[in-house]
Image (cartoon, rainbow, N blue to C red; front, side):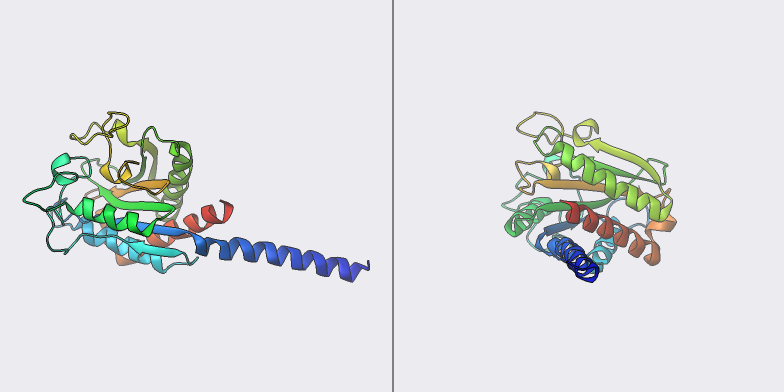
Length: 240
């Protein structure tokens, strides 16, 4: 085989390999869950901020099969625009025949049968301009989720200059009273494998509603954060 023929074969192989990796991400079903909370921070809408980040992420390449679940403005629910992800009253409780905003979002998410579930929230009261990643304790995807969360947190911090506070288990927060039925430990409702059927589940706490206010309320920075999340997710998907 001549030199040109060898080079041509090598080029075609590399092109096919790269094309397969890029287009392969289209197979991924991804559900985004922006915070629906409007009761966190003074003169601050976590729902608006997180939704803007998610919308930016969904518009950023690479293309995947993406869906947003958001109870904000949905009728017939309790705590559709407020409540804690770690409190029974705001999540699994049924009040006057109504399910919660969180329960509605997770029902919608499960109907999409995603491989990846990413919740986007803002922290508060930390006095840190930082990013935290949270994963669920005790299920078989814990390590894989830790790796994904770490990559997403790092990408946001590199894009914004925020402090990287790493990846934490939802069982370590000590918040409220919602517990995983398998481990009996405190948990985030949205990350509980008994509630959320996606194998890969990450909750991002992006910034603090006071310490990071200038960044979180800036449309340009919101877009930058969303883009950084999506591009890193795309790289992760291509590798997996």
